[in-house]
Amino acid sequence: MAVTSDRRRPRIDAGGTRLRLRALAVMGHGSACIARAAGVSEQAIQRLARGDAKTVSPRLRDAVAAVYDAWWDKRAPERTRAERAAASAARRRAIRGNWCAGAGLDDDELDIPGYRPAYGWRPARGTSIAGDIHPTAREDEMGLGA
Image (cartoon, rainbow, N blue to C red):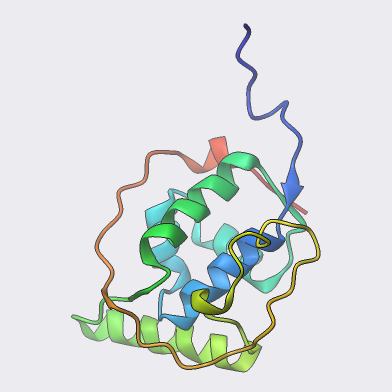
């Protein structure tokens, strides 16, 4: 059986990835922190969260899903002034955008194109503080499309 490269695999709808990123923002996770954990550029994360990208590679979707699975119910660390500022900015963005927290998303429908959560922004405290994630993939392997 031949192994195929991600470059040949079809791209997929970015909706579920976008909702995951937005749910992480509700918890105070900024785009730079998410980007480091996923092993992609901050610009790619920002572009996805804004809704500018319509499709993503399966690998990028999987990287963001792995970060989301680890952090969806965890608050962003706020040990330093920079971390507190980033978390506050992420939460403000989530409030302005009326983004749904992870607890309000239906995991069974999240990756179905056109899925929309039943709820918008609600305050979320989380269960604890997120730990560090060390990425296993590089951005050029991920791919981001319009």
